[in-house]
Length: 482
Image (cartoon, rainbow, N blue to C red; front, side, top):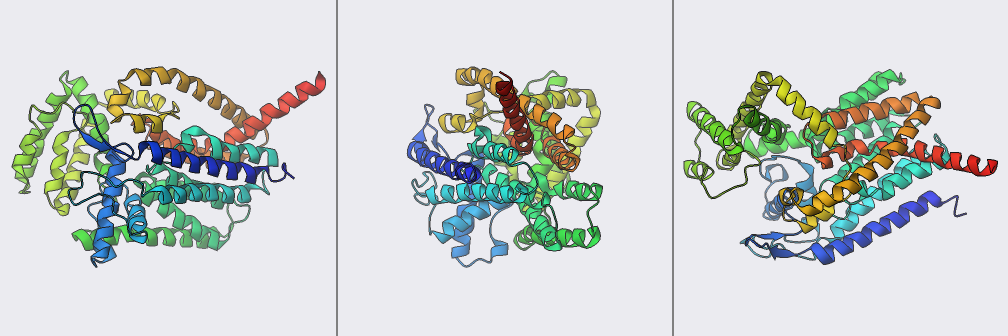
């Protein structure tokens, strides 16, 4: 009986473990503290997470004041859905993120229900995935696939935090369940289109994944493909239009691509590559580009806050990991922000064509680094004020060796799984996994941030399942011989 229901047992136990970890995180890290240099911050809610939650709180307040849904919020510089999910949570439970209007301190002990909901969604999606595969793949292989998704720490560390990864993983797994079904009806294709759109609203760079799904179904020769594609595309466009209309009613411009999709490469690549190539400091390059920005602003008659822009060159700050003059975007209209983002994107392309070899070298270097698994990300996020501080700490250097060992073991098992899938001629499944990994790896590998690799790593669960099953069978045969 236990063997028959072992998958359900793994899912339930893993769900409970995630809830326990959520309780632990709330108890130990749901705190406002002051750093040694006098900076006040919340241990769990800072940087990107702070952006999502504070935006959600703002949207909730606007809805309560009677503002139309499509007019709520501010410019969606990055992900659209996370602030909306938080807004719904704050609205339904009548919660305020901040203690008072000064917005200095964050209310504590108000987010456990959100973490519970997030954990439930993830493990429910895993259960749906299991049901989809149960009649197609060997039960032992499925057991290891599901165990990987439920217990692998690099993935599961996010369910008990406020990062956007957990819900993104949940949608990925639901999509796998729908795409890999033995028979796909028109309704099923409609659901695929819906969740592909939701996936791109959760993380904007997944917006073009739909074309890779098109390719997959074409290559496996899906029956009645035209009407299925039509309904899939219609649902995708319909959901995407929510973002477009929100932008239109709020700013007067209908658009769906977020700003960071246009400026991220400049922030994370150009400043490092070009400053090194020109043999100047990071700060010197930033200030040089700032002058170019000033000229562009004046030439295009775009009003800006000159006082704020000047302060970004002051001697007081030492953190130049990104071009700080980009912060001026907060002082101009959203219509002008779109023009600015397009200008930065054009400038990025020009730099890449000027120094192709240097950019290629950094992309290769970052693409190798990003595959190093990091099951300690949330640990460092909760115990260090910023990633920059952690990366230069002794603790980071101490943990790297464990990450290398752990990554090597998992990749070895996955490699065995790949070999087994080829031997078993699971070519349709391999095609889907290859297209998905190529997409989610290729779009972010240049960045080098190991957190960005996990959406591609989700698909390794199937390789792991086949590899682990092969290892178990090998041990059984070895014991029988002895």
